[in-house]
Amino acid sequence: MNARILAAFLLCLTSTTGCIIVDHDDDDDGGPCCNTPAPTYPGDVTFLWTFANGRCADEPDVKSIKITIPGETLHNGGVYACNTAGVDGIVLHDFAPATYSYNIQAISYSNETLYEGSGTFTVNGDVRVNVDLTPDGMSYALVGWAFPPTTTSQNPSCGQAGVDYIKAQIDSGEWVTLNCADGMTNGGVETPWLQDGSHGIYLIAYGRDLGGRSDMPLYTSQGTFVTSAGSPRSETFRFFAVGGLSVRWELWDGNTRKTCSEAGVTGMLINLKDRTTGEFLYPDGDPQACTGAPILYQYLKPGQYEVHIRAMKGSTIAYSNEVLPDVLTVEAFRQKTTADNSHTVDLVRQY
Image (cartoon, rainbow, N blue to C red):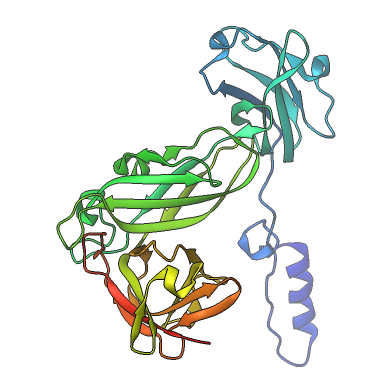
């Protein structure tokens, strides 16, 4: 019995009332009861770097590597050889436990920054930091995709989704054709080199539609992703099923059908209102030539749409169906082509 418990025991003996002795000796033993912080340890930091074209041996224009860690003074001003003892990297010693930020630059013989990477690391013992150095101010992302569940799979493959290939567009650039399976393995498809920052992407998945026609859009997806030099990230976008509709129009002045020239119509404004959301798809209308029918809309979510068409004579609405707009149904995976029978919208004179 320790001294504190013994003193309490003797006090009980002299007391006229009973007492209970509770031993708290183990309360501060460092166990979970006391919320003692987990121990932290200093450590060495091993930086390992790669380049877009491979390793240091593939980059003869790189003279040295410069590492900057705010708040830390590094040996030789943080400048090191690209390859040391056969390793594309360097070991920096004796860092206190903490989280640090870093910047790494690959410097040319003319002292220009050729490649760069940045990020953070946390020291609690030895740590290794892998950095993919990218052209100065440039980076890339890994883009992947997933399809909505089908009757046979909650996470369908390209084949189960009926998709043959993918087309992608980044930041309103050129469309590129991609292998569907590549976006579902190994983190995704590498984008081209992009400026650091936020980027928009639009994806269309093509296959055979319910009409049996190939090379038809079955799914679409769009969104944004962020690129950061030295820290390429993987982004996954989920597709949604689409269908389409086709519309044409006729101009009616009473019981007389007019051509575009006879009616003096200079152009058309078409809008589609999603009856599920109550929103118009084109805030200012989709402008079309009066003689441009039929017009195809192939990337619509399944549902019902009101078709609003204005035939314009300059800035004046000459003909319209907006008093009683036509309602059309879009079915998933069913597309229209110019060979299909388009729905004809009757436009009546407004002036």
